[in-house]
Image (tube, rainbow, N blue to C red):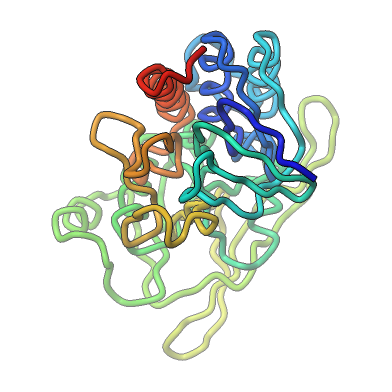
Length: 324
C-alpha cells in the first residue's frame, strides 16, 4: 500500500497541536493531525482551567480541548485517531508509520507533550483525573486549595518551587522527601526552610492515598483525599498525615522516545529547538508545547509555541517552494 502524502503532519494534540493545526489550516497548508494515545493531551485530565485567557469563569480541561479541536476542524484540519509508531526523519519526504497506515509529509510538527511522573500507586493518578485532590501542577490547581492543609512530594527545584507557590493558598504545606535533605538549589532550599508555612517531612515515602466520600453541592458523591499513609525510610515505621490535597512534583517525562537517535534532546529527554523558534536541527521538522518546554509547561505557553511552529512551518515551506 502506498503512503498517503501531506504537506504538513502534526503529531499530537493538546493546546500546542491544536493551535498549530489552526494556524496551519488557515494558511491553506491542509494539516493532518494524529491524536495519539491521549487525544487532547494532559488538559483532558484537568477538571477546571481558570488561568486560560478568555474564560473568566474558568472552563473544564476537556471542554477547552473540545473547543480548540472544533476550531481547528472548522478551517479544514483533518484529525485522525491514530498513534504514530515510527518516524523516519532522515528521508525526504518524511515518513511516518501509525497503527493503521503509512504517511509521508513535507514538514512535520511535533506536539507530543510530556507526561507527569506519578508515585506508582495508581490511586494518585486516578484521583488527579476525578478531581479528588491530587495534582501535578501547582500553578494550575493551587487556587482550589485555599485555606487547606496540603502536601508536596519531591525534593528537587520543582518540588520546592511548587511548595513555595502553594503557600499563597494553603494554611500549611508539608514537603515530603525520601531523604533528610533536599536536592534543590541552595537558594531554593533557604527560601523554603525559612517559610513558616512549609513543614519538611524528612525520610518519608507515600505508601497510599487515603480517601473519604464527600458530597458535592450538586448532591454527587466523590472520593476526596483525607490523609497520606507514609513509611519512614530509616526505621520502616508507618504513619498517617492528614491533608486535603497532594501535589506530586517528582518530574515530567517528555514523550520523545519516538525520536531517539534522530533529534537532539537535553539530559531529561526534552527536544532541543533553535532559540526563539520551533525549529529543530532537521530542516522541516518543528517542535512545540511541553515536548520542548521544561520550564513553563502551561496551556497558554504551549498554545503560543504551537502558533510559532505553524508560522515557522509555513515560512519554511515557502522557502522550499512547497507552500502552494
